Length: 340
Image 1 (cartoon, helix red, strand yellow):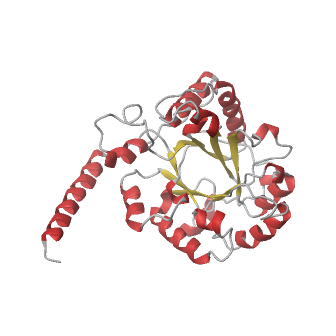
Image 2: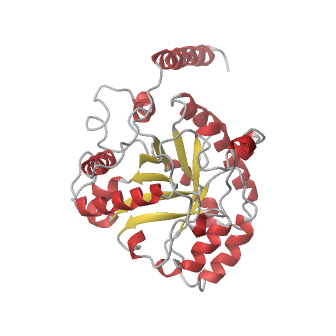
Image 3: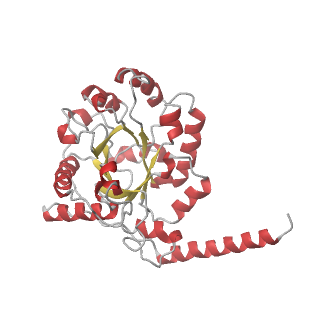
């Protein structure tokens, strides 16, 4: 891990700082506001979702049960971006299962359901948002960034960025302070210093994207780091790559130059004391796990400080999970045999 990082530059000095003495007085909720509330490496790497067509045999062993995928994944990566929450809030049982199958220190980043970001666009959605947050809080300290992924908005919906922020700001003021939130927008012309400063005031991270029609951080004319942490998504060109493949078992596009630039960017951000969450989508190169492997290789080739490897779940805990599953299946079978 990097140590003795220099103080955050001007724009980030408003992020809360604490002394060792002060930290003893904080409650668990207060402590979660600080960048390094868990002993994580300064960069957390993962993929968008933990399974896809083509991953069995290329990433997961051919004979592995799908029920064991998540536990295996968590031993290879520090974090995962859960894509399924975008489509609907999962059940409490599903989230409990995610929690049980991953070791302490693993991080789930989740997307806010599209009902909130696309359908209702932050209006009249308090009940849906409360349900989502209560369900995600089942993860406890494993819950990482919570991302509002907004669509591209036409002028018929929001004439300009100010119309959007007029709706956004009141919602931001209601967000709980003991969670990390990020915002992804897809209106290129809205990205400027004024919008970044607005997020900075609320300690909301601007989601940084590598995709065909959005600028990367080096193209921006302002500091894109708006909190004590940042969130990166390597997305690529979806239409272009889907014309080549729909099976995500290997890289089919060479993005070495772009990844090399991202390595440099991430290292410079880390030196500022900023925690980096970074996720590779299959559409970036063709295989999310391969993108992370290449990023790590490029990082190593540049002679940068070693990225800490993920933890492994204790074998006795895995056995306990499988034993519980067996009992649960047996109980279900008995229940089904009883008269209705």
